[in-house]
Length: 376
Image 1 (tube, helix red, strand yellow):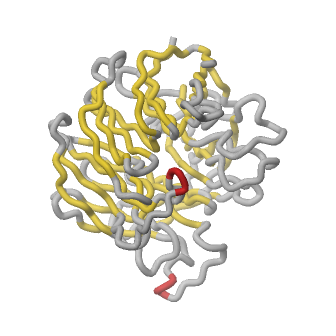
Image 2 (tube, rainbow, N blue to C red):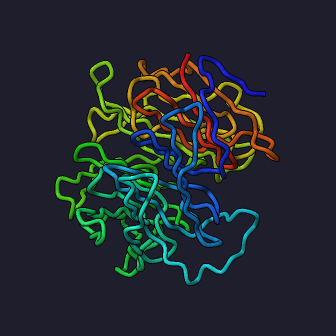
Image 3 (cartoon, helix red, strand yellow):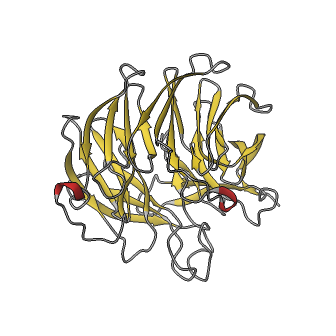
């Protein structure tokens, strides 16, 4: 049964599972988790009656699970699926990962502009401001995903502006990692002003100065893995001061741990002195502080565009959680909504959340379904 406090459903769209939902000018752009589903465009101008208006597919064994739209340009990722649906073992040797770029000035008639291609598995996740893409591609000669900035001034010919990586990733340049495999890799950068707030999986997070985009410079970073098991998924700068200080919200993703280890949670990090980030508060959903829990039970990520001190989070099996950060040392839950499990599933798997300028909240399940919600 649905569990809700302070939130009600406005509408529901039955669709394949999604990795991201992004809303622009009354249309939701959904990046789906598994092929053949790639990207859906859904008209949500009437949120009680959402309607799919366009749909793109991806080849077997790949996915396009992220989507962002600004100024009539849609950017999607192209990546080898790390966990293909249904145990799919498709041959992806001929696949060229990267980004798909579309003209969606008329969302009812989207037009493919071009594909930007990189080496390896492709692009995992990214930010897009209408001109520049800040992404996490795999690149030949590097171990794991790195930071790259692309200029889409001419969307038909994306151009690399700059790149950054942690020392040890540039294998072709003679560097040697101090970690196992691709544990330290870029998950995704998020731009605010002249900084990139960049999650780096089991390498924590990094703050990068991009005054000169051709040469991003490291400002600071913080890594708590270990002792905490779960990798860092998102680092989101709060775009306003709280109690006269500056903060970032950092979320770990509830994966890569044993069932008896602590499920992932969120951190409040004081970055008033950005060269010395300091964790000052945490939040975990009640009931997950101890005991055995399978992975994909705890935290996944917050909204990436913060509109106030009540922060919507996608919390995997715990659904949507609204966390009040007005007292950064003691964040607290003020509302929640846990949808029914998708057909055939045992638990909700809330994967991504977006809040539009109407205040509506869009919650996508990684197995099936888009909830459209509002605070009560």
